[in-house]
Structures are given as structure tokens and as C-alpha cells.
Length: 594
Image (cartoon, rainbow, N blue to C red):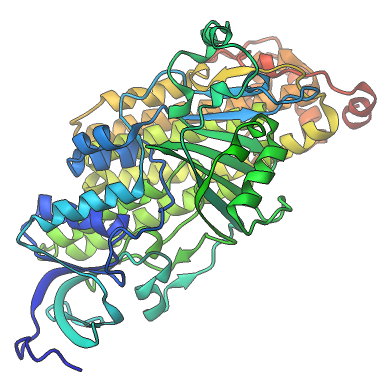
């Protein structure tokens, strides 16, 4: 049935957004704040947000900045959500029962970030976003929109046609732009045949339980002993429960995230490495208590409030931003893995480039701007892949992971956060040089991730696990501090931005070289190699291979070099990872290395 109350010519909106989740609601607010465009937001559901709890609570610096500063939600975030205390990671200690929090090794950033991030109750946030959007006369929300059809216009001078049914009545609208934010429904990806498989084969199961799980209280120590624990000289005094807390294992990790009045729990796993599958929140709780016994006395007493999961969640798309004036954001476009909480960041960057394209759709450089935006979005997505496909096993070791994460976090700070807080991703003059520098890291990152995975597998065979908890602040690898210093470089020009990125890529290359040399020195059992200039420079970072015979050859050649006694001048402490040094099993090491 056609809605005869509508005029013969269908009403026109500048932008029609399909899907009222986080991506769609934030994109609508962004457009309403920074443009004069009219926005129609459609969703199948009539209740936004839905009654079920929504997953995806942890945000990091890019999404924290986007929500608080770009979308002007800082007051709401501070009042209704938890201020986040970075990401923290924990490993069980061999030989201990691991029934106390103090039994676990920890890696972390002790100081809170200068750019705030938050633990988000997605339902509260999306409710607030819809409320704020509804206050704008240029915004219209239509829930209960079923049987959606989008006819994408071939010519840029023509409008797209959007039809749907609402309460059994067919409605028609014209749209200058159509943006798909339907999440896993992926309306445009299905309609335009854009779907591409992802090499990531990971799954997840999650649940929410009542009340706050304060992990520091999962102990048999008294409150006074907890308060006066000497380990705080390393770990700090801020409440650990405010962090996104990760309990790590080979090929999997467990998150513990605080919300107001409840706690979010979830396991993410590589299907090839993790044998368990879950069908209920109760099964998840049972597994958590077995895998990490410190939860055994607390978690079974709590009520499971809601639960869910995905056997496989990663996917790719052939395109997400088009000169035909359509786009996709959030899970409607591409999604990789929730480790390090990149989902909100991808929404933030996608929305920023989509808004920029919409604002410039009459400009002479519109097509070039869109093509460059698509290239940037593709590069950012693909840069994440080796993190998840090549070294997920390395999550099981504190030393290997601490190097892996410091490398990845340094890249994130310098090449994601810095450009974003300076609005540089929409500066064409910056993006050209940025992509050139970004590509320098591509081959290095792929090789380094594989190198670290091989090191982890070597350690499983040839190293004795640490017998006591070990603490490591990622900023002790001082290259991370240099990357974080870019947070204080604000208001830079595109030319200044390119210069800073070049400097930071050089900084990252030194970190990569240190990681390789540290691994090689550990495997060879020769700490002198850490500062041997000939050995250090022998590695080609773009062509890494974990080959034991090759490492030994490099050592012999360095000893025989004319400058074999020359020392390499690092800008970091080359012995910073010494606390992770474990005894090799001599009988096995001899057979492998000699």
C-alpha cells in the first residue's frame, strides 16, 4: 500500500542514513553539528536503543576524541559513563594457583592518557544521541522501517530513491546521499555486491553480570595489604577496574569492562587455536572460572543479565566510499577484530571522511577527494590485518606480547591519533605524504608480526616460564613516549604534519629494529649482541625471517667484521626487557643453536 498522504514528488533529504546504531547516530550528529544538511535516519527497530544490551563498550583515543570533542558529548560521557584507565593485560604465572590477583604478571601504561577515552554503556550513549538529534529541525527519525530498497542513482545530478514499508504503508524518499550503517545486515554491500571475505577467522562470546567486578579484590589479602602492596610502586594507584582489562592466553583473550551497575565480560578467540565454544552466559562464566581461577569465588555468585556471541565476525568490503554519493560506516563496511578496541575508531574515521565528502560534493576536487578517502580507509583497515592473522598466538606470552603491543600502540599514537586530532585525514596535501610513510611500515609490520609469532613458538619449546609475576610499563620502551608526545602537537599545518609523521616513522623503525635484535639475542643467548653495531645493522626490516641458522650466521659475521667491537647507539634502553629473561633448557637449546 502506497502512502497517499505523501506528495506526488517524494520528499527529499540531503542525506539518508540507514541504521540507527552507533555509526548511524554519530554520523547524523556530526552532520547536524558541522553542516546545514537535512538528515533522515531509518531503522528496522521502533525502539532505539533496543532493550537488549549492546556490545562494544571500550573506546580508545580516536573514538574518545571523536565522541567528546567532535560530537560535543564530553559532559554526557563524564556523567553517564566510566572514564577509562587505558588497556591493561594479565598473564597467569607458572607454578602458582592463580587464584589471587597478585599472582598475575601485568603489562600496562601506568599514566592515564591526556586524550580521554571511556567505557561506554552503548544503550545509554545511543539513547542520548537520538535525543540530541531529535532536537534538530533538520533531522527526522523513522523507526519500524521494513522491506528497505535503495535505488542508487547512476548520475551525480540525480537523487537516490529510498523506499520502505512502515506499518504496512509504503513510503518513498529521495536522497542526495545514502549511507549504510546497518551493521551486519550490510544493506548496500549485499545490494551492490561489495562483500569480500576476511582472512581473520575469530569468534567471540560475551555476557553482562550484575555489579562491579573489582579485580584487585579477587584476592585473599586484607584490604590493608591490598592498599599497601609494594607492587604499586610499579603499577600505580588508579583503580584497575576502570581499565579495559585483558586476561591473556595463546590465541585468545578475555575482557573485563566496567559499566554503571554491571560488568561486561567476553572472550575473543582464534578458531584455529581455541577449542571452546559457548552457548550461554553460564557456560562462559564456567569457562572463565576454570581458565582464570581468581574469578572462581566471585563470578558464580553474580546474575547473568544478557549474553550473545558471533562464531565469526570479521568481514571486508570492496568499497565503502563512492563518487556516486553512497558510503558505509561501522560494521556495514569493514570489521576486523575487537582487540585494542578499534571499532569505534573506524567509525570515527569513516564518519569524518564521509562528512568531508558530503560537504565537498559540489567542489571541483570531489571525485579526487573521494578516491583518496577510499584509499585511506582501505589502507587503515588492511594495516590492522597482520596484527590479527599473524601473531594471535603471541597473546599467550607477556614478553612477546609486550613488544608486539608497544610497537602497535606506537603506530596508533603517531599515525592514527595524531592526524585525527589535527583534522589531517581530510587534508589532501597531507594524506598523499602520509600514505607514502604509512606504506613504509607495511612490509615491516607484516614481517615483524610473523617474527614475533615464531619467537613465541620458540619460547614454548626452549624457555622456562617465569615463576613469579613480572610488571612492565609499555612506556619503558621510550619510543612509545615519543609517539605519545604527538598528542601535544595540535593545530599543525599539513606540511608540519607530514614532517612529524616522517620523524615518527623513523622512531618506529628503531623500535622495530630493537625488537628484532632483542629476539635474536635472546634466541642466541648472547646479550652482547644487543649493542653490537654490526649485528644490529645486519637486519633488513622489510625482509625479516625467523631462521635460527641465519641468526647464527649474522652473529658470526658481526664478530668477524672490521668494526665488530663497535657499539650501536640506541635512543632507548636496550636491556629494558631483561626482566623477562628466562633460562633456556640447555639440552634443547644446544641442539637448536650449535
